[in-house]
Amino acid sequence: QKEVEQNSGPLSVPEGAIASLNCTYSDRGSQSFFWYRQYSGKSPELIMSIYSNGDKEDGRFTAQLNKASQYVSLLIRDSQPSDSATYLCAVNEGTYKYIFGTGTRLKVLA
Amino acid sequence: GAGVSQTPSNKVTEKGKYVELRCDPISGHTALYWYRQSLGQGPEFLIYFQGTGAADDSGLPNDRFFAVRPEGSVSTLKIQRTERGDSAVYLCASSPGLPRTGELFFGEGSRLTVL
Image (cartoon, rainbow over all chains, first blue to last red; front, side):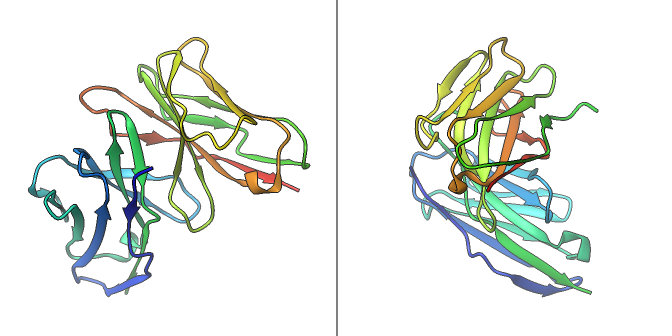
């Protein structure tokens, strides 16, 4: 099985700052990349998808993809305490199988 | 609601017993996934269904685990002769299929504890 790696954290940022979350993957054939947010005791929920190199913005969230470096990141601008959660990176392996990283725990300090 | 429904939400069983976990996906979603998540880990892929057939069961850890989706909607994950190492949260997710195949909508999970 291919690997998806994330720093487990916790990553602590002050309220209003930019949080930067990173993910690397091993399968050069991967084409689909996703960020999920998981609050403690809850199930993951999709927040961003990205398929092409470059940046994709959605509100306070920006996903960045660099296929040559096998690297995908998530930036959260104007971080809020409600953003405190574990952020999971997911990457496709083949057509329909999705592999998750272990997640990065983000703490936004008020 | 219209989300993915999983039952039971909690299951405590004894080592060696048989367990069934049920998943009712979002109406109209053709793809259904089972994942397993242990504390501090990301979801671990178990099996994927497209319609009634298991398109990829490469994540099932051994032959004690089996899943079915007989009518292409509700799915049941079956675990025989449970072991303490099977304790985890079992997550079901459904997906609308092409072109949004990677958009997984998760249920709240079934927490399995094997004593």
